[in-house]
Image (cartoon, rainbow, N blue to C red; front, side, top):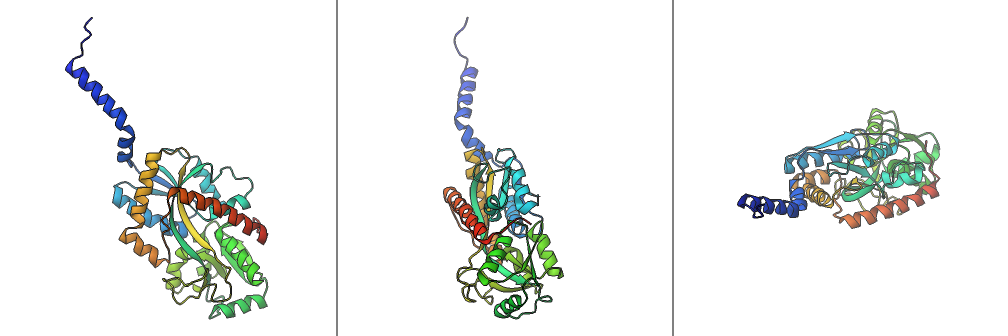
Length: 328
C-alpha cells in the first residue's frame, strides 16, 4: 500500500483545516446571507412600527438583505412575543419588543414564554417620553391645567385608549389617575395604531401615548398634546410642558423599544446584528427621523441592556401592585 500523500491530498487537507478554523469568522462575515425576519408584536401604525420600519429600510440599505417585519398583535404584545420565542435561533429571527413586555409578567400570570429566559437581549433601539394627547373636538381644554380641572369635575365621564391591557399606555394612565386623584375610563385596543386611529376619529377622548407614534399627528393638528412625562420638555415639541412643570414631578414614564433574539442564537450572529442596528440608528437618516419623533438612542451594551430589562421588570411590578391595575 502506498502511504505517501499526493500534492492534491495535501492541498485538500490544508483547505479543510483552514475551513474548520475559520468557520466562526466566515459565518459571521456571511451574515446576513438571506432576509431576516423581525416580529413586531403590535398592529401596524403604532410606536413599534414608527421605529421598526425606518430601521428595516436602513438595514436593507446597509446589508443588501431585507429585514422583513411580521406584525403579530394581540394581548398587549404578548401574542407576538410568544411566537418570537419559538422561532429558530439561527440569527435570522428577531423580536422588536418594548417597555410593555417588562410590564406583562406582572399583568399576565400565565405567559407561555419568559422574557429573561427565552430571549437574548441585543440592544435598545429608541426611547421616547410618554405624552398626554386628546382629541381637540372632544376635549377643548387649551392647556393641561384646565384639562385637569375638567376631568376632576367629571369623574368617569372621559375615557382613554391604550395599546392593550398591561401596556405602558395602560399603566401610564393608571399612574396618572393615582397621582392626580382622577377617574378616567380605560379602553384597551389591540395596539397603539388602532387606538390612535380611534382617538383621531373622535371615538375616544384621550390617550397616554409614546411620543414616537403620536408625533406626526400632533404636528398635523389631528390630536393635541397637553403634557410630556418627566422633568423637562422634549426638544421636538418645545411648546408642550413637562410633567414637572405642571405639578407632577414624579410622573416619569418612558416608552422604549428594544431588540431581542431567541435564546440559542449564535454569538457571532448576535454581534453582527448589534453592529448593524447601531450603524443604522446612528446614520444621518435615522438620527433625523428619531429626532423628529422626540426619540433618543440609548447606546447600551448587551449586558447593560439585559440589566436595564431586569430593572424595568421589577419597577413595573411595583407600579402594577400600587395602582391595582388589572386585565380588562
